[in-house]
Image (cartoon, rainbow, N blue to C red; front, side, top):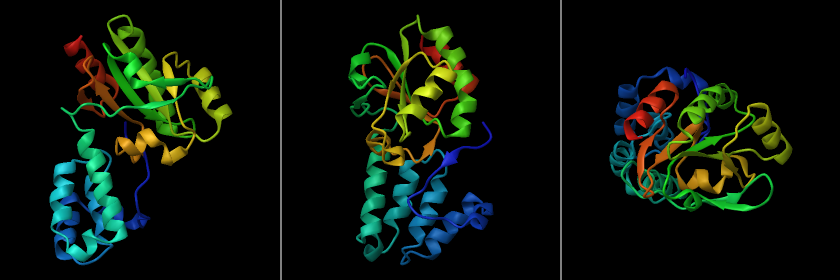
Length: 221
């Protein structure tokens, strides 16, 4: 996929996105006492952030920045990224289905589960859905499930998208858009994004799409 809908902790001027990762890291190291540097660290991470890399950069900031309200919020985000990284136990999720019934990630224990963060209003999510439909058709009878977690706010829009895109797997949401509790728990700041969990509840991969996801599932299943 060529682009992703993303949201960041801070507002970032569009013109700054032309900088390379190396330039961004240099900018972080050159401005350790500025609150604005937190924005730059976020941009270093991009769509698929490495919490270890971001933590090292964060630790290099002055204490006044790290202990500020913005710094504490960013530290919380880094902890969520670490807790949902490959090799960790997947944090528990319980939200409501479109029918209003509670459903949990643990209800799918014993299967490989792809936690798919998406929304009806996200163009790239909708473009990715046909690929997921094909993946689900190939693997649904081989101990594999998908759990869609929607960043929608309107129930009707969410349900309409599920029906139109023929997404026949499990779906949950708290209808809080970017404030979705599961998204926060997993450090999700861009969608579409996903987490692959094994039958024991351990995270084995993050952000695999299209044929890369299929290849991983064939290897595992």
